[in-house]
View 1 (tube, rainbow, N blue to C red):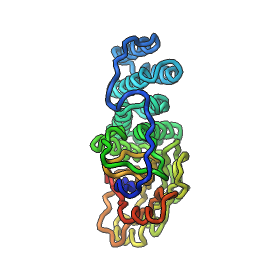
View 2 (cartoon, rainbow, N blue to C red):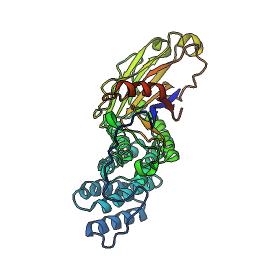
View 3 (tube, rainbow, N blue to C red):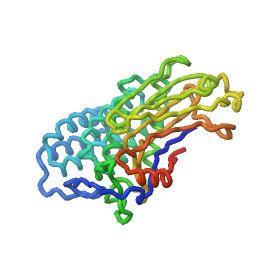
View 4 (cartoon, rainbow, N blue to C red):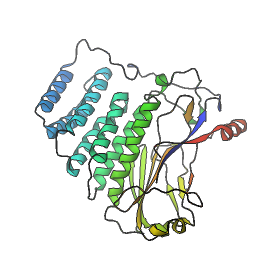
Length: 357
């Protein structure tokens, strides 16, 4: 079972003002020509090119860390944006020039987390590259072993920063905002609909693959495990399917978010009866919540992006369907500072959109 959903509202639900922050650089997807690159920029790109030419993936990772840390105080915003894209492209390229062991994957996640940390320097290309990193290191390679919390935290930080960066062209005040239909989606959000779906699929599938390995050696019925980043939170639990009967699992809001109520997943009382052959099997539950998500033109996000995945212990995702009672998901939404009329309209027009299910 995979489900990735977010509550969206039509543009005319709320009619208060929109506040958009000027990026001070250039539109997503465009590159400004640098007539006189700084010495640091020139040296950094030269060293990266040399490491790539020699197929030294380990050196690329080390350079990415050093350059990312130094560039935040050394280069201009334009150069920094281009440089972060170069760094992430180098990390992606390096994944095809090394044996993709778990230790190598964790090393890349650590480097990528630092590259993505300067969200104001991240453009759409860099965001999409972060999804490529996750897909290549997790989805295309089977790591049949425990993932430690530090590695998982770096992966979560990379995802969190990518989520923050892709929504950064628009500083939407969730409690007091709407978008007019005439606004072009690309002028407000980094990713168009096709790009957003591709990015989310990499994130949803890749996150589950790595986060469920945090509980690789866990005992069924043991405590839930949590991995945190600024704008993302992951909760993992292992249990026998029969023990999920009528069980509720709460997914607290990400650390830096204005929604205080948790998302809630409740499994039906008859899930083991509906799936008798699996009743005593151990399953892994992975919940994920993100403060930001790509928005489709004409529909605007009013909740967290929330994902729930149910898979066999150390195994594949379960194909669960035709239950006599549904698995219920409750998502909190941004409604404070709305008038009674606005809340009524919101309740009538908002809908939950599922991605990657």
